Image 1 (cartoon, helix red, strand yellow):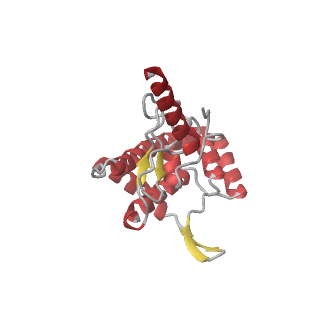
Image 2: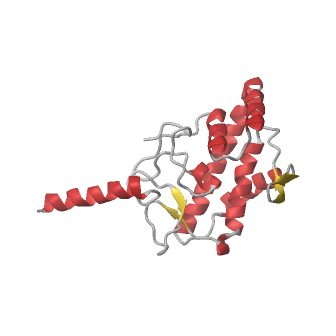
Image 3: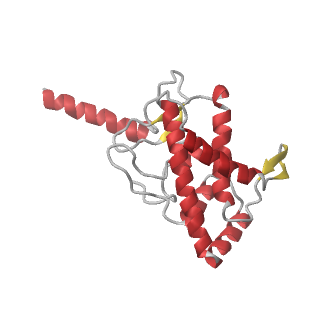
Length: 203
């Protein structure tokens, strides 16, 4: 079982889904919460290779110098996380996206868009956040969530893992489009063992 964003599996297939998956379990039980500090949020961004070392160090210094703001950013990130989770869980359920959650994600994404700059990349130029303010971490995830929503007709479906004590979100890249587990090696294996033991009890 994961204890923090430093050792959690990154099985969502997309940054916004990995943020939503920072609760260890959402089925059968809830928690533990792996996102308990601003540092946890920053570590997740680093593990996803979304920020360079210089920008990460800059944000760490900001958080140390202004712990009150860092706490506020964490609180906002938690609210965003839950909205992202509800949005894409509804997609898996074939339901409409919740209006309130769409509104929250859109608002944070709009704030981030206002701070984007045109930067050179290996493939040319792209819009990017400079990560010069703590709040831009949350805004970045909101932008990514909006991109995932907008691209729905050009991507595979988002699924909710049906494993006991899981409920993580992931992009289903299976050929059948009916994948049930965020990880076949973990939740899939546990499900098969559970079915086997159930059959043995019935023998």
